[in-house]
Length: 442
Image 1 (tube, one colour):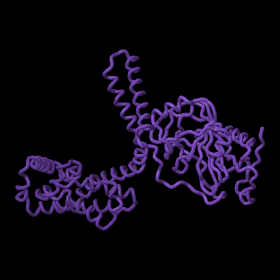
Image 2 (image 1 turned 90 degrees about the vertical axis):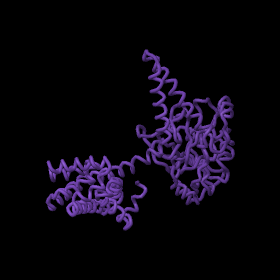
Image 3 (image 1 turned 45 degrees about the horizontal axis):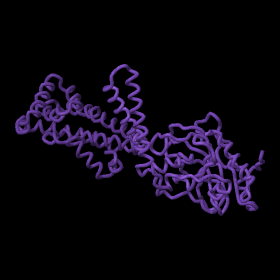
Image 4 (image 1 turned 120 degrees about the vertical axis):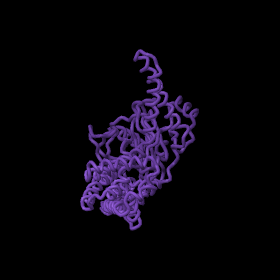
């Protein structure tokens, strides 16, 4: 329904709303019209665009439909109703309306708008029973304001709710599916397991863990979730333009994905891989750029060089990833993105423990990083300092500083290590853009 909301403010859309609202209680056809859909859509259109016409149209024409049925009932009376009353459901609604109108009059006309099938015959019955026209018009107007108005409110609330919640649900549908399947399986195991409680808890824990690990296995090794996206990579025309690029990378594209900083900039016609090879780092496989089967993964894991999970810069995965010698649990990792014009961005951090983190579309088992990312940056600066092919330009204040205690997975002074080829002199204009502070090796 909400897909058609933008078209409801057109002449054709308003005409359709008017026709449905008018026929809602029109004797003979009201039984086949489900005007609640139109009322909800009109309320949603009002909430979405702020235009009052859809809501006003359905209120006015719903009242005109009541008045038309009333006039038909007053003109033709009960004689016209005989063919209409052949169905038992219609006869039941007719009797309820007739009895209530006789007892409560105008009050029932108002209330009938909330009584489903009874509302279809009440205006006609009021005319047939010769209720005063002005009295009916006022009662019908109040009934329309309340009965139709409630659906307008529901539609407006629904539009606001869906506008805010539906994108969130769509972005995290895998998480909801995993949570639902886990809860369903846990409830089934709990009910089928015998007491004591600890026995049930163990079985529920085992089943929940199995579902979680199975989802991780499918996500990394079965489904095509790591295809290189079709979005164009971020490319800069020159170094100064690169200083305006985002200096954050994330494992996904929602607010729940914790970012990591871009804290290395290489200005060179050579790549980040060339720099890491010069420094003696190992190049890792990545799920986006390498074919990593489960068997391959186990072999790399045994060699303490497992594939690197993806981080995305402006929606694009890293071109390469490297690690410094260490253990499975503790080692330095860097990912590189080629930005064009001889500019390369690197995101460097230290993996320190295994944790459940939100990655891509699911919570998965991944390394958690040491929040003190500036220590990793300065460590790399020390290695470059001793390099024969590259040199440190300085620490440029290009990124946002993140203080301890802020909502983040890291803290940093915002400095980006700038590296270039040995003996290369950067233009004065570039140095002004970067404004690097000298780095002194300790």
